[in-house]
Amino acid sequence: MGLALAVVTVSLVLLVSVVRIESDPPGGVVFIDDQPVGQTPVLRFAAGRGTWQVRVEAPGHTTWSGRIAYAPPGLAQAMAKLAPMPGSLQIQTDPDNAEVRIDDRVVGVSPVAIGNIEPGLRQITLVAQDFEPWTGAIRITPGGAFAQRIALRPIPARLRIDSPARDASFWVDGSMRGTLPVEVSVEAGERLLRIEAPGFRAWEMRSMILPNEVRALSIPLLRPWPAIEDGERVHPLAVIIENQDDARPQTGLDRADIVYEALAEGGITRFLALYATREADIIGPVRSARHYFVNWAQEYQAPLVHVGASPQGFAALRSAGLPDVEETLGGPIWRSGSRPAPHNAYTSTIGIQTSLGARGANLGSFGGLQFKTPTGAARHSGRSTSDVAIKFGRGSYVVEWSYDPVTNEYSRSMNGRPHDDAMTGEPIQAANVFIQWTDSWLIPGDENGRLDFAQVGGGKLLALVDGIAIEGTWRKRSLGTPTAYLDHEGNPILINPGPTWIQVVPPAGRVDFPPS
Image 1 (cartoon, one colour):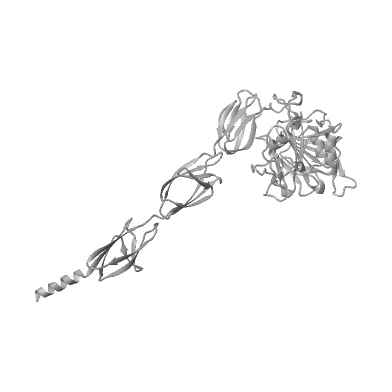
Image 2 (cartoon, rainbow, N blue to C red):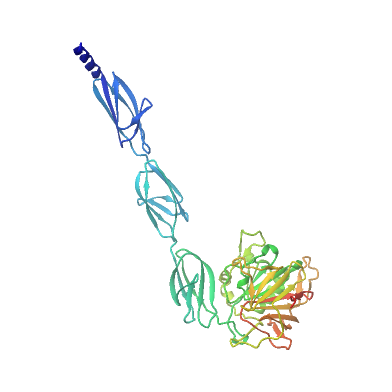
């Protein structure tokens, strides 16, 4: 009985087939007749004869499929070659439009999406004009999707700075970069450029520096604020700036050397800002000219920047013969999207000078302003006061000037709130303030209620200097002559070097002093 049982067992073994399934790479999931049976390598036994439908899958690889026939006794084997699936790559750059190379092969311009990339370590190179090339290695996995945003580094600009002044130092963003003449490398972006030299007024300009830019500047530094007899050559520029509620806060009034404020129609004041010693990257909002602003600009021989003008303003421009820059004539005036029109026109001193070219080289002056000499001057006599309120006749246009004895400057407020510059956020300040009462009246027949001013002759004057309110008079013989600012004894009022505001108020205008 024992021998018969052994023979039967051997016969059963001979009727079983061995099936072995492998893959390259190993670890693929094996499906037999759509049923998962494990990961390669897989060893299975099959009875009798037959055929299995086999599928092998692995992440990131193409699927292998085939049929395996088996018959006892024997071994059936299958090797599934799993090909890696290609990967994909998305590249964005800052800025856009950089040339993208993969393993030194140009594949497009950013932003770019590339498919069918063979897996492995790939060398990526980005090239953009005015930016430093970027190179890096990126590993592409089988079937993987790789995305990256890369900020390209701008190529620094080269600035060549010179000035006739000796021992002048050049500063960038508060850091000294050398003594003129000098050539320096400067990172792209908005930069504050400054030149200092003994015996000269500092020159300062906030400028946008472009990547890989090469710029040469020769800066004729100005002497300290002059007395009128010094005869310093100046080339002032004049800009009309509005003062409606929608125009505040303005930009660039803090950079002006002289500012006139006078009523326009409707009881609203408007400014004439003159720039002679400092640059301003942004000035505005720029508005239309009135003839009295033209006449005041003529006193300084300053080219006028404006957006349109009244009929009388255009006539005054023709009569004065001043160079002018106007938006409709293609002047350097741009519109900002941050404010609605017409309160969104802006300009810059550099843009004005470029637009004027040789026309802007005319010799100007500081008009009738007379400054203290470097050795100083006798203290003025008058009422000591720290605060003055000026009322133009309309409740929403009340100007206050507050004196700081530490800085010897006046800070400006409007309607009880600091009148700040939009760029710096700091209150506008002045070294001197003139309050000039001037006869004014409605122009007969003008449907828009435009005003006229008695600009020739004279009138009452109050000058704020050194915390003193000096009573006096203003006198002007003709439109082409400077205005004289005299104290009550008829002597010229000598003022401090620095920004000077001239507040032109109508006869009904009031000046209030705080209780002492």
